[in-house]
Length: 180
Picture: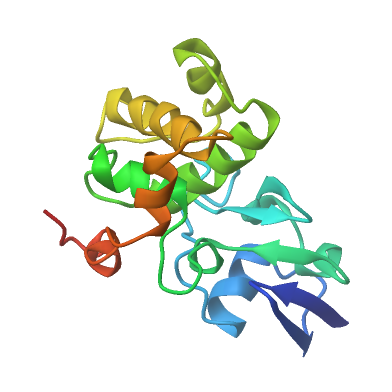
């Protein structure tokens, strides 16, 4: 089948097998390897992307179901060399260890914050319950989501400027095992 999909702001038209999962299309056809294949059963959430602005586990969506849709992957979040505030908060709060779950956690966190811009700890934990992390114990992940909520709140002032300003010199290494 022929599909046309907008991924991270670029339109792609490709022939795909009807049974191809969106995660495999993104990784194998488009090279969007930040979208991780975890369990292929929709249990872990590592493959979470945004489909038309809402998070989905891309291992549970067929590529043909994304025909005509807009998909955002972890690679599509940074703008002009600056990390998304949620990416920055994950880095600054050390909300990752091995990093395998991090792309899906970030994508789910952004969707959570779109629905609830000021979640308490319980709301964050509930909003992320479909995304598993085997390393961190979730404390720093919850802290990062709450920090990102503050950074993204209207009138965040100097903190919002810091996220979009000069403090991105360490951004490229933040998810490549580097950083502080």
